[in-house]
Length: 168
Image (cartoon, rainbow, N blue to C red; front, side, top):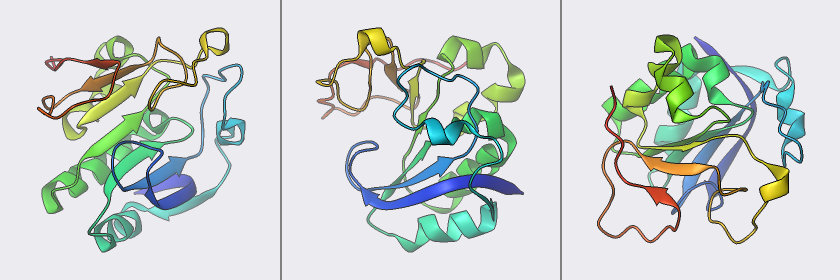
């Protein structure tokens, strides 16, 4: 199974707490006005990478957790589900995922929802330029939520997080 990847950032600290391996995928139909990554909108952009190769990259960095971003990983949900499942089964890494969909939209679509059980944190919702707030951590506008899907850590100090959301 393959994922169309734009870039992989190693040991980034901008895409979630701590060091992270961030996998930026190609393809997004949300087209948020003011998007900081409009080159990611092209579904034919970047290059194809096998899930097995991406898993090897993730596993090679013992210091970093994982981030899925883009584009929007939910437009390649089957492959990202396979990658996330393998990461969770074969490592102890956490996975954060950014999407322009809301959690409610994802939960309403069983095909999209297949990725949720493998994620630790979902940052949901479209970026709204008119609400842009550069003081927010890991979000561009306040409508976007940082949602813990596996339980909120006791040491959480990220403003704007949402308490644990039980999956249906």
